[in-house]
Length: 153
Image 1 (cartoon, one colour):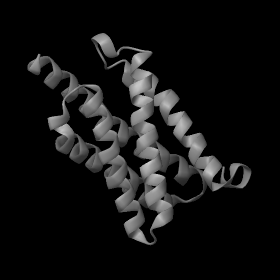
Image 2 (cartoon, rainbow, N blue to C red):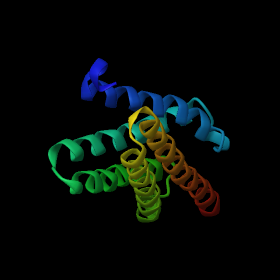
Image 3 (cartoon, helix red, strand yellow):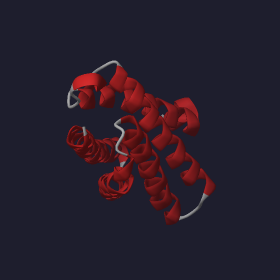
């Protein structure tokens, strides 16, 4: 993808794929007023914020801290959007922690797989592990956001 789309183009393509595919899967976890298509707007804003924060940190910093800071910044921004959307702003810290842990586990285990296996297979495994872990973190956030929204009503 880097050769055909450039680095920025690849990041844009991955972001669009995560929003389209992830929104469809995670949207099935949402009840009531946030059902599709409204959920796509919330999820799209959350993931876009995550992607911008991650990409900015990755390109602005250098060395291993860029990936860690990107994971943290992206997780916090995504948590803020979900907490605001579900009106549970007191949950930002918990959501940020959940997303940061899930995101980091997926990203760095995926990176290890890629380093050991390499090539297209390693890159594909990286994407699968990263997507599953981040998706699990987002699923947990959506679960708690809805649960805490219901409890506070």
